[in-house]
Length: 349
Image (tube, rainbow, N blue to C red; front, side):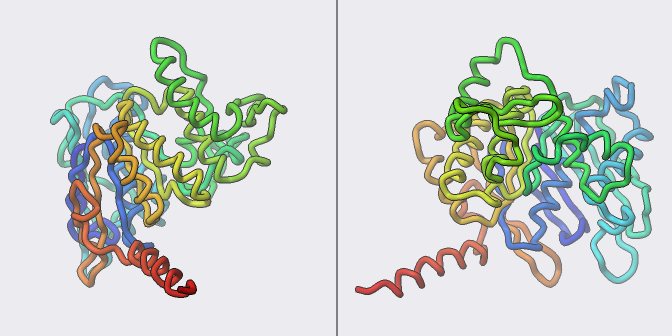
């Protein structure tokens, strides 16, 4: 579980210090403010820490392995021409530094690279053990329709897609979970399947929605429902149950308001089940749905943390707190409020 992330000279950030909740974390800002970069940086660190033992073959982390693995993951997730392109642009040579703290101090990981770096990373803080569970990253688009053959193609061909797509497709293709947590999985799945009108199944390498009237290919399901179906599948495989983390970039993208309401509740239910959730958004509708749900008895135990990103001449600054009121003015949210006022003003008295 990630508790803190410090970014120095990463893309649009001069210095940003994020203190995370163990449950819900909401990053809010306009386009270009760095929301996705925060999620990708946090995800990259978490992914390397989670897969380290399996990929390295060593029960304990080593500096040499981490320097190679971190550089590879950052390049795969961000897709820069060279690693140094992720360092903030400024006069002279600059150095990007990333420091990540977890629930256990033994997991802390710190590293850096400079603007001239192609693939070189220097690890300053080496964790003494690995994190166990791989994180889940959901991009703005759904992945069920590209799943058939995508992983094998990605591994054998140079494709212009982020590595998060490959990572998530691997998790989507995992076998269904079994064991003592099936009742919890069922409790999370049933509301989603009610919304979808059926169950998400994987047959012969393709995804379908099994409904009472027959099977529907994922390609023929509305895109908004396909995003909801991805969550359902990841719950069914156990990837989003018990422990772990979910990074979701703009959950509201291409969804109608009715589905966004379901998404908001699902996010909070995942938090209560033990998943640490990170979302990036500039949707006032989603923010309001989360706020409404957080005030209900069902979700009073969820601990939210909000981060407002504010671009300026010296980089993006971060305001954070336990309430939306703590993060300062976000123009994208204000514009939606302003439109509501302007619309009401046009109504006849």
